[in-house]
Length: 390
Image (cartoon, rainbow, N blue to C red; front, side, top):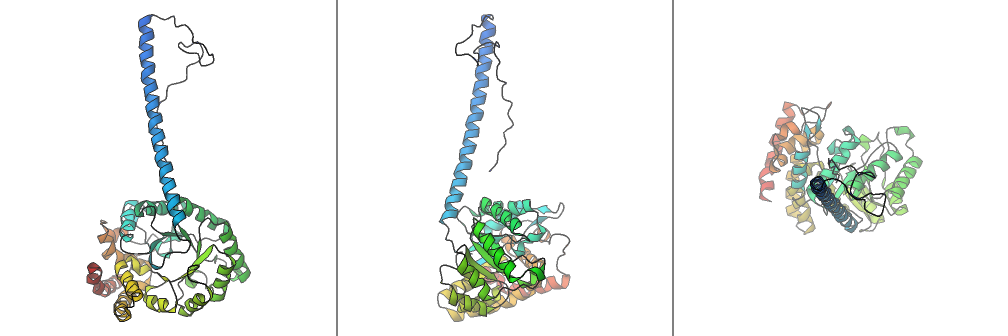
């Protein structure tokens, strides 16, 4: 919290300027006419009151800032080192199309709404946030907005992907300063052929050693030049470094979940599927839940599937999961499709005006075609009443 006060403070009186000489311990004799001296004394009293008032306000603001930061640090410190199990939403980003800037008012409403739907937490600056289209300042702004909107104790995972160790550590520090609890980290992959196993090993270990936040590895080969971390590599990194506490697998490999569950004790490491349509398959294989873009559209429905499965109501969970999987299918076309679906449903529930306009992708990317929009509208309709009932 930063506050600037624009106050005209009185200049400090110099020796010989009447009244007390700041450079001597004894008062000087004021030889001016009495009424002038009294008027000056009254003016000085008002100035002193003004200064004291400003000091009191400044002190109050500073104390409030300290209290806010202390509460945030306490909440972050009390958060489990391993991310909570359940359904996480990688939140989408709202833009003012007239300026191409962030729409933080809409963003705050959206974060606040999602945080009250039963989700285990929010991922801010994930792939669905269009993170690589954001400036560093915008990244910080989104994290600060999320923390303020969700409160000090709600779990927030920050995407911190970058191309170098130094860049990533700067992003992680920004995330920690903004109140994030976990860091979601892609492999460095711009130079795909040069990103050897040795490079990956040193990268993840160097970052984990210096990071103030626990690290969740993000395996997403499509956006990483085909780099696909196998279960042995992930398990090896987790065993080597206690600050590596989880993985998001957006590779569709349920077998990796099984192997990681076999190698890494529950409570020390969390594996999340990266797509909601294999939520039950992942849970059966040993995952702790999912981090899924479709949670932007029907968060309560996905949470319900998770809860039903955990309650042992497998048939009921599977029936709902089938409906969700079919509804999600057209949203797999990309981020623009997810944003359009959320604009039709979740953003409206969050009280956001003109969501279709604000949820267009950031330039140069474009919104779905009219044909795609019709497909999305027709296929998500089956879940709208279900979501409303939860």
